Length: 200
Image (cartoon, rainbow, N blue to C red; front, side):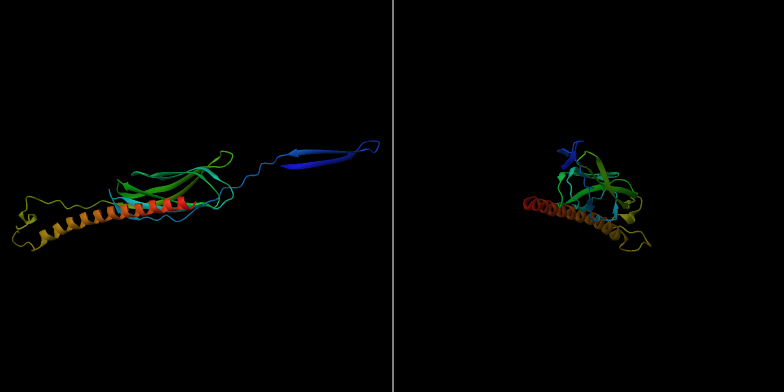
């Protein structure tokens, strides 16, 4: 609010005063700052990928109806996070786990959408690329006895059937380890989010 004072005289020199109030709407430009995306850059089809990203409100205005989500050809649960009204000076983070279903170089993004005090919508997009590879699974041939444990063909190197078995075991162990890591990371981040909420 601004107050304007008027002082003037009439034709006879009599002084007069007047006062008027006017309002000027002042808006602050939103300033949402994001950290770097933390995630694997290579994976296999069907293997879960965990993504993590910090973000901060470093402006002087509240960001209304802030929503964070994952864009791309992925599947998973919890791919969006509704923050709500994000006050100045506040910090938070986004973490999710998604699964790519198609091979090749997959493009995705972390999308931030929010509104200012006038209801104007703003979008901020943090893009990423993920190299998704086919999981090579050697198929046993029942026509060749060499692929059956305990049976070897003349001239075939000994231990080849054992090597193929270890390939299966290694791939299965890698998938199990990846799933365990994802669960542990998500639990730690959930605890951290609760601690942040209690501090606020």
